[in-house]
Image (tube, rainbow, N blue to C red):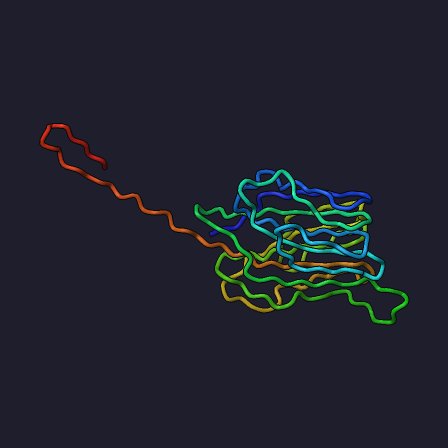
Length: 238
């Protein structure tokens, strides 16, 4: 059993409302798609037929971020629409697939956390780290996928402890930087999977998805034999 990255894609827009992002190259029906996006306005909307993994709206300086996921439909569309109200926006998408014949992916557990930038008007101590809440692995061969956003230009989120970086995207338009990272987890594993170290002076968010794989058994092909018939014409399948 194995879950692999198909590819990633990015999109950004200056001003306006909704915009589109193409699926990662080679995306197939049944792939699991996950996206994290941000905008420089106070709100974000929900993408059609996607499931929200987490939302942070109205960061004190007006920025917002959201993560969502879905199974790619058949046929895979040429683009997906990111819902945006105003301001600048940027999005980073990743596609995952099962390397096993008959393998289907699903999301078994979700965690979300966000750190708001230090507002000089609010007296509170710095919060340089935060922990993703407890999540439970669904099966052997599960994959923990982290979608991270840091809403400051040229400052990528750090790779969470114990995880491997899968992709990064820098968006000068929305002044946001994105990263995906992954970690294989065993069945029944519980508890905090990692701590993401973040600069407390910057708005940051992370969605953690436990992705599991189910294998549908391929029907066994059985050889069928038939005797020669009385007419002298016969056949045999082995």
